[in-house]
Length: 147
Image 1 (cartoon, one colour):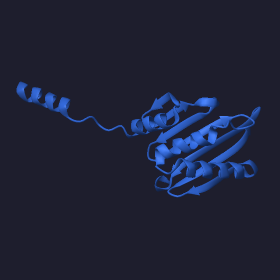
Image 2 (image 1 turned 30 degrees about the horizontal axis):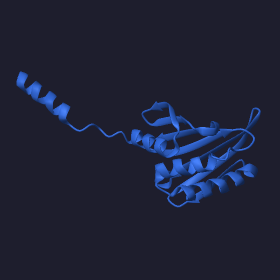
Image 3 (image 1 turned 30 degrees about the vertical axis):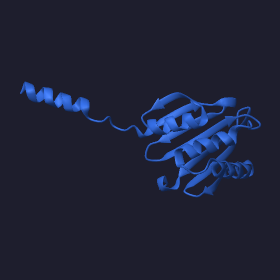
Image 4 (image 1 turned 45 degrees about the vertical axis):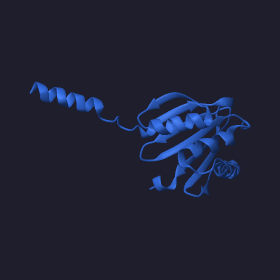
């Protein structure tokens, strides 16, 4: 019996570690955006990026990456950061995601919310008046994940 327990323990130690799909996505987003993880759960991560831009990643059954900014005008790095984060999670070119986000954000200024097709993903942006200023939030969602 003792030998069996020892053998099972050795098998457990030599078995490959379970893959962490969310951890892999987080690493890709950090590498692409140079954002810093500030909060992490099993299926969600929150980041802080340059120019006061916030970034979130949901990597459960519905995967998406979002970029948020609170202020009257977006910093120059907002859309390029969004494009790189979207590319890291979807594989779609950063320039295609960035262009879709610019269009969605322009439309959202008058409609509050807009979405633009980006091939295998949907880019959605909203603009709302929150307290003392505007909040812009854009996300890219794989179409395969949408129900």
